[in-house]
Image (cartoon, rainbow, N blue to C red):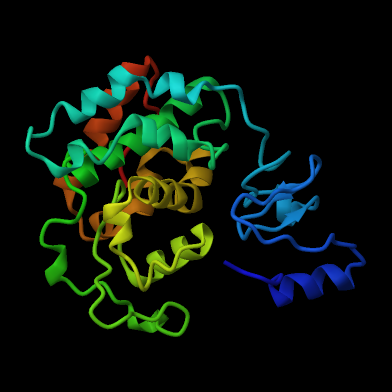
Length: 273
């Protein structure tokens, strides 16, 4: 987690004559009532804090939250209906729970609350479609065969150094992969995931936190802007799009359209990447 404002941002705001409050670095932020919490855990009132990367407080851009009842949409019947389609001996059955998801949801107040209520339902359907595909209906906590794969991107070693004997294969509700994703997620959550990637597969809260962090960081705003489910496939697994893995794409689309049907909304256009 950062302890000082990024140098270029600070310099730019200073030259523009904008007076910023003293930065406050905290996972919960503890900002004042009129302040926003930025993605890096700082408090302020300008666009850098209250805009696209705002995490808590009176966030204003690109649009204020609607009043969608996300816990009501992600009902017990809906969540357990996904779990019920996995084998009874799946390790994820006792690992992924609705209660844990709702607990983590409090830290992501923008999730499923952009646009109209139908837009909210589509985003929630999209998120759980990807989770269903990635985990096999909440069956898998770790990627099958992931331990044998090299997920160290050495072009990003400077910022996200791969630690010896640590694997950055898929783990958790959205199968977090690669050292740079573990590094960025850990920085946001205040956990050294580069040195302890296994916690994503052993701590239920961390598993859902990394999933919602990834979604909000890489898929939420594009989806909220009306780019459709296809854009979220590219955000979650662009390899499926670029390599033409039609079967995997079709699987994700199938789950998404089914969940939209359960929520009583049309899936919209641009379903495939």
